[in-house]
Figure 1 (cartoon, rainbow, N blue to C red):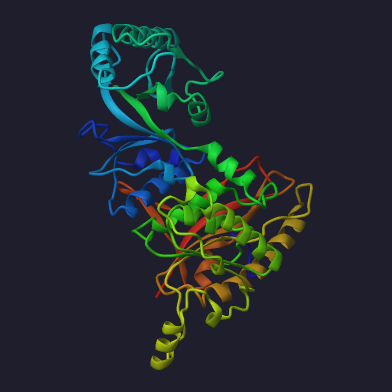
Figure 2: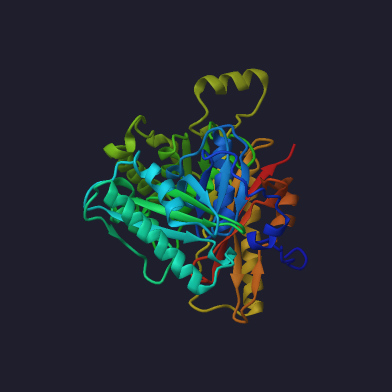
Length: 459
């Protein structure tokens, strides 16, 4: 191993919040409120990336670990995301001391333009309650006031037998419950977003479809074993290629494609996708999964069938450039004439094999040996990857960090390793603050934890 492992401090959003310039002032009611997932840094990065994919640099009016309010001329669609939970339309703002009549006026004016069915469900979700100076008694009174006012509005509009639903012991309703109860389609969810001196009222318009990811995973011909890359995370990783500028028009290549999860999610996003694997069985399974996906009516709308030749067998440590499917006969001949090697002009998005047969946390000496093996493997992988990734090309790759039996973590030396291959870690911008694009993906504290890193090959 090359030197001692140096743990790279990854700043959390809560640590960075005091440094971010925020106005808290709504420039218009056309601002959008986004509710973040369990990894707020990843969710924020995906928001930035999706805005860049429509050629917009977002301005953040408010940010917390719960969510963010964005001002932009046009807005993204979170149903293309993997880590953003809710997208909400802002309908008004109120002070902490406000009368029932004032709240009723805002809600009634809004509901009059809404389609709400009889016998539908509705909900109220509260975020940033810790920002409020209200006591428990004051908050209970305020909640009851909002509840009573909503019921009064529904009665005035002659919407009958609607029912409010709650999440057990939580201030907010989960996207999964909102979808299963058809709250967005037939009823409504109000969001109470607390700021230091006021409360934003919003209505949820879109939620992430977690069940769709789960069904797509379980219904395809070959399903993933537990702990392999999930579909929602794969989608987030693909979106991160646009973390600094729009790269959604470029293709994506996964050299460790397994059962084709990353190519499949790229296909659904309308991005040209390629995948290879050293294991011929994985190639067969990936092709079957993509063939199944491209034949599903709800997924293939406005998309051509997936080209199965885009999945091929190859050892990335010994890349055979002339065999890549993105190289046409015409381009081969053209490159031959000018004496150039065939070149790929897209991004690389991948997770290597991080599985370990261990069932218990390793000691420090055992973890160091595991890390040594990871470094050896990644060095071989990168020698092949760098022959494919073009100058200024973007990579989104998973690196490991190892939980040890003393509750400490041994982290892959990402920054030093990428520097040796002439690559740099990219960042994303929240107003005046740049945040390194390196994210810890927590999943019940496994032995091997994912570090998702967005990097660029330097000139």
